[in-house]
Length: 334
Image (cartoon, rainbow, N blue to C red; front, side, top):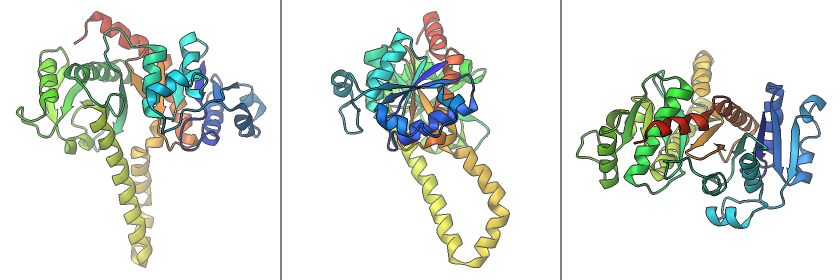
């Protein structure tokens, strides 16, 4: 399997994407990664790779870069030789089975739409993020940034794609679907959310109504649906809260001796908690609704997260993720 990696996307490019590609190829002897970007800079970070691994890492030169400040659609249209655009084109042509990028989210979404195209029956794509919860359940939060302003039908289609993803690709037999709102009562929500609720109530999905922000970390439903603006704010608030709690703990532990002693006994539990909620473990999130496998990695991703994002792409392709969504939608949409 060949996967295209936007080596110039992200805060730590190209070093971490290159290191992540090496890690992924070390872990999976059947994986091939094509690094797209500034060939000279990429080659510098591949020198220490074992020859057996280096043989499965290709380099395709692209002399333009889509930056975090670039306007999404404009950059995809005008920077045709950017690492992101070239990687997307490789998926469209069949040279690669998937593309992974830690770059500009808007440009990734624009590339998915303009280069790969939408799945028939889907108006706008959605980024779905699996979230570890305090229960044993993993919830899919969709959307987290692909479509900032949504119509009711967009939210309904996110719910449908999220349900298909959880049932066919994760193995949840009858995924529960909820709309994120400012209260559980039916009178809550703005006009868009209220109209989306009525569409979902009339659908065949296992719609369970509204959930509030406090319910998301509790894992009360398998799929949580919201617009991209709300989802992105919620996701980043959770990340910041987790980092803040860890920093406060470090400060308190450093102030006196007794907390340090207690930490020795708490360390196994803390390691388990960190592993459970570590975003790097999940690596990347799929852009659902486009005709190609596109995986968005966190902009701050280091090598481990990039490697895991490549594994997410590998598994999504192996499970025929795009084809599964297309087939299910062909049977009947919302």
